[in-house]
Length: 246
Ligand code: SAM
Image 1 (cartoon, rainbow, N blue to C red):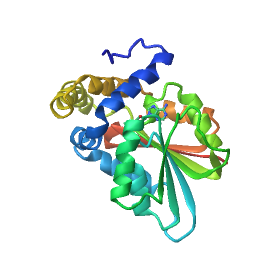
Image 2 (cartoon, helix red, strand yellow):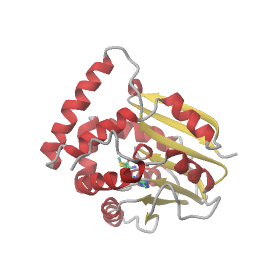
Image 3 (tube, rainbow, N blue to C red):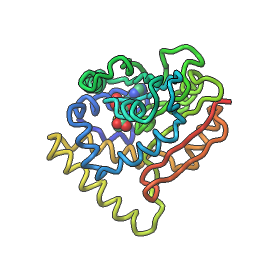
Image 4 (cartoon, rainbow, N blue to C red):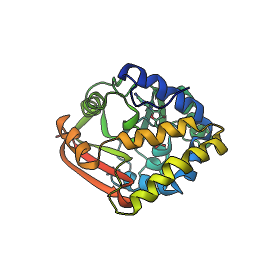
């Protein structure tokens, strides 16, 4: 398989992305820890504390788009009160199966719902959710503007979208180390742990092609979000974007 992506037409991108996550689903959580040196945990904590989850019993409906194995959902339930309910949407059944098994093991099946669907065409009515999150998912979606519009549509007025994604390293010197790490070490890790380097080459390339924080903030404004703010983390390796539907 060729995940080199550079000239892949939009219509084929989704199929390739699906192959990648189908292959890595069972090792996905372990690989996250290995590849980010555990940093993804810190980044995800910043996102969950920025959702504005109620601590008390008030009902709060969170949609986690491209939620995969449910990592953000479980963190949100830990961080918030008893009224927090999470819908995890992902296009990939293999990732969702891992998530549903985790939910059952944690006895959280009544608080987390797993739904297979496409971020570009969300299967929910307008104004359904108090907040929407997407972590390391948006760069995999072929038509980002469509997905942003959809996420805004399903938000209640006053609700916020939080996007956690890899960004652009902007620290002189560190960028070279980061390049060497991502182009050499990550595919090797993929080979050793998941038995295949190709999906991880796709991962690194997709990160390189994703816009910098300011450009992405503009895309959110373009989709109708207001009060958009970007917070770079770890020298720009990742960034959290927040915007509101007013
Ligand atoms: N959010 C999880 C996390 O942070 O651990 C999973 C992130 S994983 C890197 C990216 C996920 O995006 C995969 O589970 C993949 O199936 C999903 N995905 C890719 N394209 C999608 C689409 N068009 N709609 C919904 N999910 C999609």
